[in-house]
Image: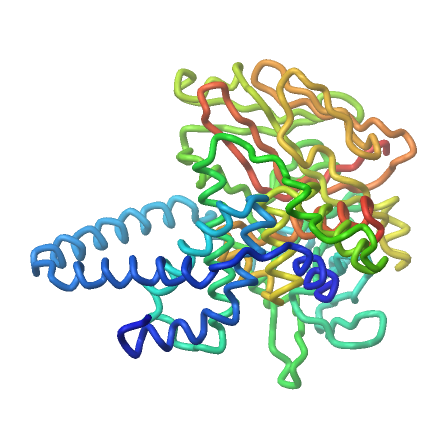
Length: 322
Length: 164
């Protein structure tokens, strides 16, 4: 891939006098730097004060975005696992859809198909499966990060006891055994404050789901006047026995990877979904009857006619045509 | 000519990457004038922050990340879309070796099939070998978004060109 990219880039012809552009940029920076050095101490004091304000604001945002603290001894119960019963099965998948390994309570070093130790960047998705008290198979997505352990030989080990409950985010069962809502980041890049907005995800019919958007101030966020939307679903699995049997998942296409005008009905590339927006809701229907199993929705977004955008990045795992 | 040691040192490091930066900018902006502006802006921003660069071995990656951000900023400022000047892009004669034709096709796919975010993630990951966490930080994107964007971009290139 690197080689291909390098060769492709070399196809772009170069103009003359690139050096002069570089020198212009450097001269401009040098000139500004010189001016900056002559500024008064008062300017520095003002800048320091501004930094303090920014830091305070940042801390406020950080505090707002922190997930509720969950006691560590509640981790297993939170996942639907009661100590003494079936332990959850953790699987790690590569971006190519290969299963890299399984993690049990003793931990295991993940290996690729060549038995080479893999690093966290090679892991595309980690999922936890377990059986609930009704015998129903449950599944949830595990965020990356807190459970990585150095093994001392350059490998990475993942251990259940290293999981941090905070990393699971809030799980809300929308429909029993069929949908999980993971961590949600509410439009931090789009001038949307947490608390002013409410987004709910619910199953509306067999094989249909709905993201509903509500705002405290409907004049500020008129979701009934959406201009465009998007929905990303990353991948899916033919069915859970297939996955648990170790033959690996089957990847599906994106649902709507680009922003789509509100008046357009958009079918996924493989017609996995039909997606449309009406009133305050983004409606999703599984379209391909041949597709069965688990599918992960990764983000949903809406642009309003007043220019405001809301984009949620989450981990919603739903079950289609089952 | 540079008039002090710091400028000379900066230009020594920047000169080997200036062509690369121009070409990276071209991937986004698709025309020479804007790409030259991005090159100038990248030199400006990098030199302003040059003292803060503690590990010169990362200069190339650092400069490219800056160039990508400059390109994205310029795209945001531009309201118009500049169409691809094919004669400029495909200035090589039609009798080029087949391998070069493939390279140009691949370039075209990158430029026209991927959106800005996908271009950035593909370039940073596969051309410069940044880890996903580093890309997340560089582009100010959640890690999950970087992963899904990378998967989507590779999928597009694979489907549309069959070249990877």
